[in-house]
Length: 558
Image: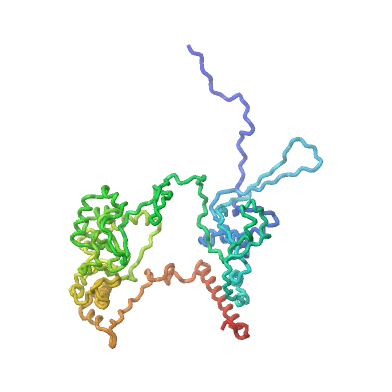
């Protein structure tokens, strides 16, 4: 029989007093804000440190809960008063720190030492919900000659010094772009700099360069450990002019674009095969869709993307968009000219074929058409498949005719049509008229004369925008627009459309009238106050200049 095992019970070991639970303390509800100042601050230099941060008001605005992105920006100026010095950018981040007050009791001199280091008392004063940090790399600094007239003018404009602004004169160009360097300016041993003392005085640049607003946008250092890119390989290239062989680094992981070949209207030839990166992806392309695209481009040499997509099923359109190589395998594009934003069959040059005039594209910008500007995240997530999803939702037969204009129905709010896709009887007669065809293709009007092309655009514009307004334009209305003004060959001006608020015809960043009202104590009120202050300063400056003109002090500038 086995002996009984150990019986559970209280431990015979004495508990360590250090293992006792720490006493609980109440955490005060007071909030403090912290600034990690990148420098040594003494109690007597706190005011100077706050001044370098932009002042007490600037620091308070940076820590406000409802402060804007601009107001929450905190900058440290190490050279205040110098407009050419670049400040150190700071970030206000959320923290959950506790502010502790630590007091050390000092021992009196002459007291007997018993090995005691000292007595400390710790007290929690409150929480630190926000902290300003300066952990970004400082921008490059360059100090120009502050005695230069441009530097003096810049300083005078900062302080609104009218006399200093009036004293400015354009300096005479002396062409002294290099001057001798002052040897006493920096006394360095020539052996350390590697210069030859017998070479004469050392020269320095005198180009009177002034600093840009920012030298570098890089704020985070790269941990490259003094090693080259592992994806780079050394390759040998031959200079076409000299025949000399050179070695250079090539990044094997570089991004390869799969877009169609793009040429300018002024280029002499046209591509007859796709680019090398696109050709390498031919084996991965959908053979059925690729064959169908080749057949379409044999039937018709030039297509718009909307016209091509209308020839396929929604899932096929999605494949064309996602693959990115199907269209570049069979077509190229023009950057400018009458066939801009169209897909053209490889090897076909519309500038050499008069029949290509029916493939010219017309586009009218609809100022009343709303534009939705999604965020960057939504662009990345939905941008690639947005058009394909729209095709999936629209399965009716009418949606397959969005690229056709018949003068009676409107299928979209933007006018972008090829002439061959216009079936309106009046416009079709004007398009097929061969009397005003050029002998040589023009970059602006293509194969049509300027007068004939303007007439087509005038009628198409009137018919399209009339349909958007719920009215079908008659032939009499269009013919009235084609009657030249009396005594000239110009067509009458088209009626201007009334702009509506809330659309993208407003200035970028502008608010609708109902949102632009000044709210008491709101941010708009603050902006209006700033604008009013700037206007008052401008009025004071103009009044001072006018007074000095009357006094005869400004006669040299009149």
